[in-house]
Image 1: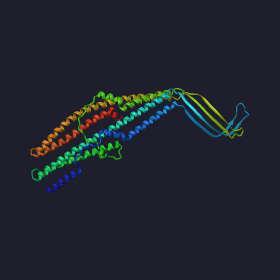
Image 2: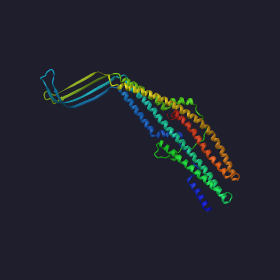
Image 3: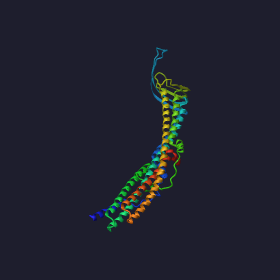
Image 4: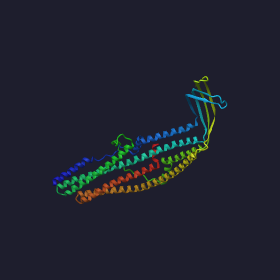
Length: 445
């Protein structure tokens, strides 16, 4: 029975060695956060979609400006005419004939006045281009946010893999030492089994962290529009560099910057300008339209039975005016619709302003708390590492029990995970502040 247990323990140790590779090296040649963001903005199709929407808005602007130019139309027709005339002045006379007729002409129409509707339409289209550019920046901002979160999650997952592997190696080493002591009859077999269990637990944590890394990598690969669903090794995020953490920004300055630079807020402002011009345009359509018109044409008739074939030229130049006096309330209600949408957008702007202020206040509160937690977790980790090393020496000297060593090692593993998590949490909340204010976009202008 004892031989079977030893074989089982050796099999577990061998399995652990196969599943867990050597200690993960630091990704000094991996991608930094700035590089990931750049690649996302270069490759993601949503960015190109936004660019095409800007092009579409610019085409709409050119359409609106074309209303200032005259319209020239070339027209023509050819067909069979069946004519019957019975003049009232000559009751006894009736003329009936059929003939072929062809017409060709050139018409010109130049709008002179339409209640300033075309001016408002052109200005609205101009503000529409501006709004599309701001919405394109908003697309970039949201892509940067998604990439940043996934990048930080990948960094944390990789750090957790390192921590789990270190925990595994520690227990695997002590397992081998305990086996030697068990063979010599110094310690019970339960000591060997204890370290085997701890190694397997560390191995499970390693596999979970590896899954988290793959998940984050899949999201980053999608954001960067890579051909494969996973990041290649050369494009893995760099490991965490526990650097000096920056200070927490001031709320007032962050809010002022956000209300000036955040693209979705600016797009709402531009949307108000678009609707203001739409109100002007709909009011202008209540006014008369005056245009300079002219045409020149030639009509050819042939196949008469009573008269000879003939053709004639005609031309006209003049002023044409039209004014819709009654449309069943359609135009008046179009104005009311535009005005109501304008007021709704003003309320939407106020709602977004309140949301931005609330979000920034939450971020700053989170940043202050995250910073305080990180500073404490750093101290806890350093103290826990010192305690674990001391307990390990005492255990090997036969002073401390295996239970105490298990506690010390578990505390160290948890402290290392909490230390890395708190660091990433603080870095991420600072990243989110830059994203929420729109400041991050200044790096990509």
